[in-house]
Length: 125
Image 1: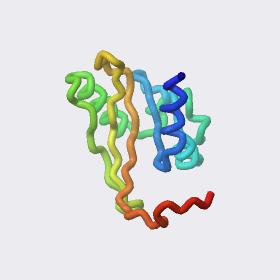
Image 2: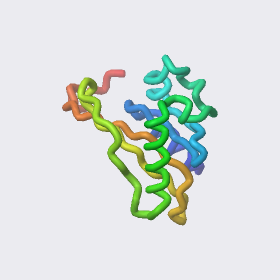
Image 3: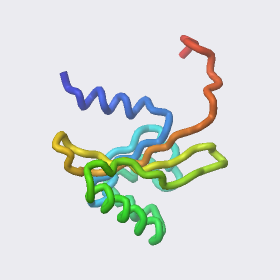
Image 4: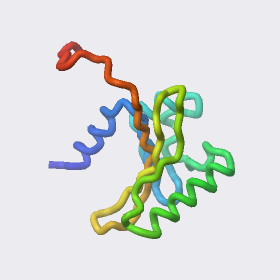
């Protein structure tokens, strides 16, 4: 069984954008929601490019500060970075670590705060 396929499927099904980066800030994966979210900036074509090219200098400075903080302690794994009131969501950066706790990258995590409006167990496609 290839667990990587299961983990990729989890991310691909997430309705929130997920962008994974390595420690050199290269975008190594975007889920379909992220591709749609950032279509104006290149969408899925951003994979393989630097995340730092998508942000202004001040944001890049903060991204690097967060990565440095992640590297400083294995307990540093999640930090709140942005509130978007228009979309009613909070945005975080989360550490990605290997099985030994070594930092290998990071990702952007969006958490929407709207109450679900769907019907419970609605089996329609």
